[in-house]
Image (cartoon, rainbow, N blue to C red; front, top):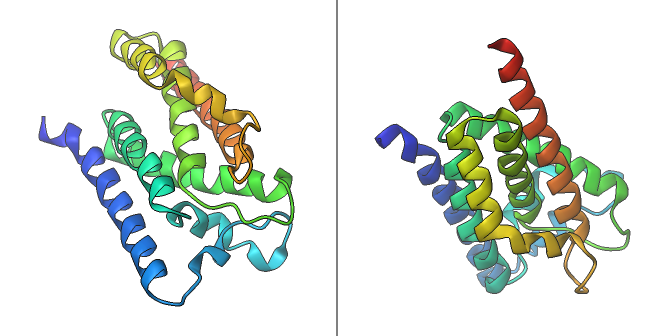
Amino acid sequence: MKQYLQSGKVSFYIMLTCTFIFVLNALLPLNLNQFGIVPRSLSHLSGILFSPFLHGSWAHLFSNFIPFVVFGGLIGLKSQQRFWTLFILHIITTGSLVWLFARGNSVHIGMSGVIYAFWGYLIVYGLVRRKFLHIAISLITLLIYGGLVFGVLPTRPGISFESHLLGAIVGALSGYLFAKTERTRR
């Protein structure tokens, strides 16, 4: 049972790192949020990697904390390697798409793009994989976090719906591809 909780623990530590960075940014005159994604700015390409670890407020950080730990733990039920593969893949692909397609003249920060990618992955993977445990996880994810669907709409200024939308698309696509690959191998 301990091995199944490892990715949840790792996800928790990743979010603790985000908390440390947020506190450091708040206490010192660093302005780390400038290292987020600025769409189509070559000087901000590094934001693709750094933006998930930056948050604009306590509310922003806390709204990402629990879903990331829950989804990361669920993804890690397969293996910790699966968690790391998807975490890195979703940071790079979602961040790259935000850099290419999001509104300009803005800085996109936060873990929510990765959270939406995990969300999309969990839903699609289970439905395509067609194994009881994975279907159950898909349905529970939809039931408890179904309200996330509204985050892909441009409803509130200052919130990167593009990160949410592109993350969900990336996650759904990766869930489909991972599940199809595993089904054809068997």
